Length: 369
Image (cartoon, rainbow, N blue to C red; front, side, top):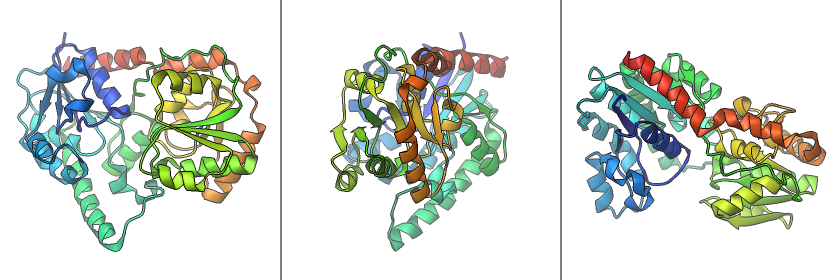
C-alpha cells in the first residue's frame, strides 16, 4: 500500500474539512497528518499519535489555544519551513486557507495532490463574505492580507501535480482564480447514521449548522415569518444572538444538539433549508440520507447535490428580498409526499465515505504509477 502524507490546515475543531482529512488518513492506515497547529482537546483519539505539527504550534500553545485567527497570516511561512516527510509516495493537501503553501517544499519528493475545499474565498471574492462587517481599519488590513493570500496561492499552483475540487462551483473558482482545471471529487459524508424511517412526520423546516453570517440563516428566518411556518434552528455560533433578535415566535433555537437528536431532527423535518451559498454543503446530503428533501439556494455545492424534483428544490439565487419571497413560496408549497424517501437515500449514497475513499484511491494510484 502507498505511503501517504496528508497535509491539513489546522485541527482546532471538527468540521467538514476535518472530515476530509480524517477520511484520507483512515484510507491509508500508515499515513501521517501534518497540521500547522492543533488543539489536543479537539483531536480524535485515533489520530493523536499520527499528527505532526509545524513550528506554529508552539505559538498557538503559548497563546493558550484560545484563538487561531491571529496565527493565520503566519501559516504560509510555517508551511514553507516545515520539513517534508521522507519516503512518502504521495502528498495530499487539504486546502482552504494556507495549507497549499506546503506544496513548493514537498514538490519533487513525491506527487502533490491538492484537495481544495475552496481557494481562500474571502481573499478572492468579497461578495462571498455575506453578512460580514468590518470597520475602515479592519477593511484595509483585510484587503492587504487578501492580496498576500492570493499571491501565496498563485505561487503554489505550479507545484501541484493534481488539483481536486469538492464541487463544480469550486472547480469553476479554481479555473477562474488559479488558471488551472480541477477534477470534482465530492467530500465524504457520514450517511450511515441516518435512515429514512418516518421521514417528514414533523411540522417544521430545519436549518442546521454553525450560525455564522455567510450561511444566511437570517433569510430562512424571514422566509418562515412570511410563509407562516415553523422553523427549527439547530446549532450555535457567533451570529446566534443577532438571529435570535430577528426571529419571531415561529422560530425555535435549539443550540448545539447531540448526534442522535440531529438524526431525528433531519428525519422528521418537512425539509431542510440551505439559504446561503456553500462550497459543498454536508447538511443537505445528511438530510437526503434521512429521506428529507432540501430547499437550497441555486448556487455553490447545492447545484451538485440537490436535484430538483428528486432530492429537493432550488430557490433561485437572488438578492435578499426576492430570495426571501421565493423561499417563503417554496416553504408554503412543498409537500413531503412529493418526494420518495428511498430515492433520496439512494441519491445520498453517491456522497458516502466509501465512495470518497474509492475515488481517492484511484486518483492516488494513477498519480504514483
